[in-house]
Length: 219
Length: 405
Image 1 (tube, rainbow over the protein chains, first blue to last red):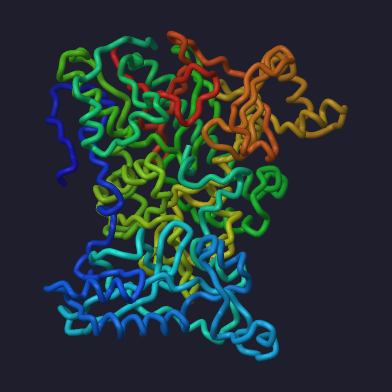
Image 2: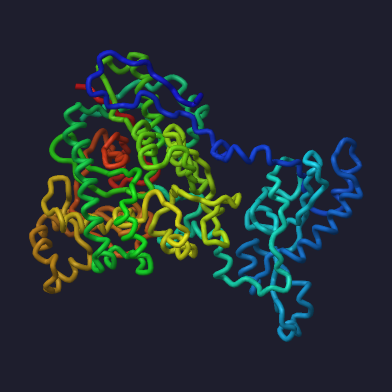
């Protein structure tokens, strides 16, 4: 390993109290990932709306066309409607997605009558704030997309498995980013307990004031 | 034990940046400070720190054996009742510990006194194991330190050996921490490098990305199942999070193991004093509630020991919440008056313990606390923190040390 600093053997060092080598380099989180997923990355580009995609598609040499923008935006809108997380209250939704990032469920119909319709009932869901297209062309596939919604600090796909700092720009992302999240349309909206199925750690419950990034959890 | 002014290594700040040690200065103040260093004799290291460190850890293991089957102590330690079995099983199954750090008061003479045990989520590991080691090697190469000097710092090698001993060859270990906190992250990365050196696979996952699969297993942020999880996140919080009910059924192995909830709890201090009264490395310690009961004249199993320690406690004592980090909630009382108080009181709503005051020595206006590192069951290294204040906190300076004589 290149990060190891080695010291030559020393003569005579009775009861030596220190390591002969240590790991000196703090390389950052990127190094501590599974090597196997590297070749799983695909080209991706995110857009806040359809028009910015169409504008980008005018440039030469990109892997998507204006037609891709239109089809994939329509697909992302439909996927958003079908798979975006649904919450039983606006408060719970905004906790997960940030203030002002949620709206009522268009699939639930009129809120006044939704309670009588059965099925999912009235719920709140994060608004569509963009979409991400990915190219599977090098893997014999086509162009795929996922809708993007807000998180309190950035953006994510409906499954929440991938988060992004921005809803525009290009890069390489894991192919699993384009896996479809489970259908939520017509399902019971999530209660507080169900939301805990991911991100259930980190509340720092024993400290009265919020801990979060500034303080850390070590000592 | 002496504090010596020494020349700083030229360009060490650039070297720190290059190595990714980004928090060498914190809050506008130096955190890593090599303008001076502490010198210990080999006898001080071996007889006053290394051997007592291993003995204290062995005593803590006995305390765990006592507490995990005691309804009284599990209650006093505020371990949530639904997880008593989880904690007890981890001890009964012999789940191995990885590391911890004793904070000791020591002035070069007489027995070091245990202030507390950071047995679950100790940080400052990278500084202790790696950057301090580099300081020593470079200072000796430069002739600043003599040829017959050494450093009590086998931390990195001991960690690599420990990982190899407690995991199967090639086992994949997930490391979870708050990735936005550089100090926490550096500690996890130092542990992960040691794990890789021990022949294991090491993968980082943000704490907030951990999920549960439909089969109840824990999964990382890429939906990969977690078999072994190192978490730089305290058990007392873990057992109170929304996810707590998923932990035991997940079948995942946790490092540190759940029984560390007993040790990394300041209720350990009265438990140790109860089991090992008058041990030279312990300070008298009691639950505040027991002291109040004794004051009301109630007969408790602790009343006699409280009466015996009365004069010492009256001279000076410290109160601290059973859960707290980095000095939060610590209050010092001397001669019947409050004489010092940590500004951070975010843990002060928890039950408190009362511990006799061990006056920290004063070196040029700074008060050092010794961090004795435990890996497995052995004491393998030392890191010194010092502060102008008498209550050490997360911005207190890290000072290098060496052995000579």
